[in-house]
Image (tube, rainbow, N blue to C red; front, top):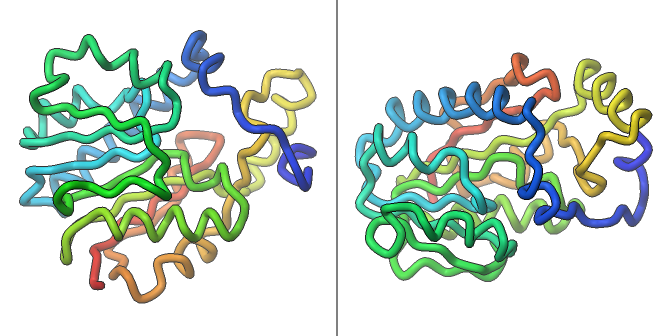
Amino acid sequence: MSSANDPSPGPTDWTVYYQSVPWTAHLTRSYTRGVLLRVLARYCDKCESIIEFGGANSCFLDSILRSVKPRLYSVVDTNQFGLELLISHPGYGHIVSLHNDSIFDFIPSNPADCAFSVGLVEHFDVNLTRRAVEAHFNAVRPGGLVVITFPTPTFLYRSIRGLLESAGLWKFPDERPLLPAEVIAAIGERGEIVEQRTLWPLLLTQHLVVSRRIK
């Protein structure tokens, strides 16, 4: 995984990615969507407000609105093109609010019941990854739910990514697969971890960490 070891890899071009999402992404998103819905149903009995960090062109929005029925769903991302893809959503301006803002700078008007991200915190260096994890807790109320998924460097992940890189098909040069211990250390005393596990069916394996804000 040469790009993971590059000391200064270029940023992922999310606009290009959103313009041509690989067909394989639809399969992995379907599985991840099911995991998220199960987590929200189990741990977020009061989910009136939800924040999705890195949620431009969100593939989870519709399912969460149908199943969880939040009063407010905020999408926070720095990619304007991806945000504009959600403007036509029937909930826009009513339930759905879009924020062209960094996870490091976004301050919700009121703390949310849940903040989550799927495949976001690994796109930063160690210090910024820690800050990104902390930002989830800053955005929710005490007792609020934080859900974070990120790629983890299993043999399966490294093998598949290596093949994609060799074929010139890897689209995420700044993706840094994380050991769970790094994210758990970033959570520290801010949260109580209620569930964590590796999502093996994704092949490019992700790790899921679910926690509640303590302070």
